[in-house]
Image (tube, rainbow over all chains, first blue to last red; front, side, top):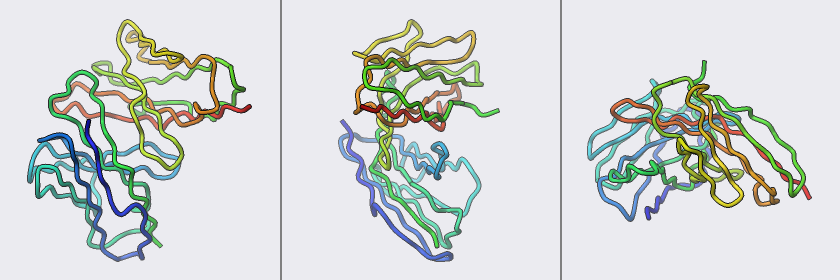
Length: 115
Length: 111
């Protein structure tokens, strides 16, 4: 099964500072990769997804960006954080060949507080 | 209207009780349905897929009603360890087949 490593686990950043969250995947190749955000009391919001190296699709307009420099590496970035960027960020992967369960494997998440 | 809607709860039940959650979805062309479980401040994990004919996994039973566009999760003989948030997840029929998550229903099982 897949293992998702995500870091850092927790961070507190001032408004206007940059952000970089990293995610790596083990146990599969050429997975679909996703970045979700979960704000307090709200559901998971899909931010970005990627079907391959260098291929990024954005679901919502925002001041965040994503990159996939390697098959099993997915990075979420921002040049200048806003207060509204606070939340629980989750990286997820789905095996391209898994058409049965459609299961998403999640990393342990990165909890971001912007002050 | 939200794509996937759930009662946020919380549902407070005693140990041993039977509890049921419903979830409605708006896209009639949705193809796949799932229940995920999320513990407090943790990542979601797949609990079970929901099949058209309904399916059971131990104390958990999931059902799909396509005509009324809702899915349900029934938990029998609730355990303290069942306390969590249960997320309803629907996969669309577009080329990418995006998974859409509900906001979750919180369950609290007390002794």
